[in-house]
Image 1 (cartoon, rainbow, N blue to C red):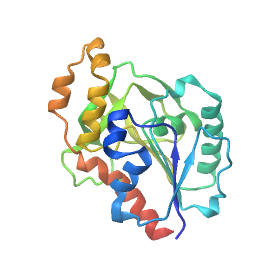
Image 2: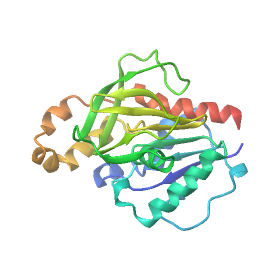
Image 3: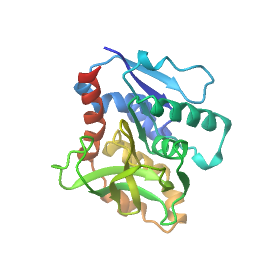
Length: 237
């Protein structure tokens, strides 16, 4: 079985990392038995070459506290690599920053959300039927923490769902390329850690961190996105 690569683009906030480890740790834990492995970690911030397409079954791109709008050299290089990866027909799932990076790489545009920051457990509205999303989950709750969004979709992209502050929260960018603005790897412990870390920022933005915390849960519907992506790839690899 060929490995799924986890392309690391950043690190969790300290409280979350202390509780649940790295983004790669959270992704593997969330996927669980849906893909027994092997896994391969790559770091997008490193100039090291990626393995050949044929050596991997798929790629998952993590979130990051960085902003795609910074246009740092490593981001531009990763975008070029991701565009080539998608063009090859290889499966890829972008999470939060990874979702935005994919959108920008394929011809869309990322910017600060004009509707403001979205953080906490929110209910998503799914549109259409797609194997990535378990439409039987009602309500479809997801954990999310982001300021930027894909404000303009790349050509050919299909919206699969939205959240209260993001109309492009779930996107099929290509036949095997997906992006989710939510964090399917976040459970309630990680989500609360993010809210606590951002408490001062939330207050400055006229958001109530205690109200956000009161609504946090494990968002198990969101976790199914990772599990379904990995399960299909595990059976196809």
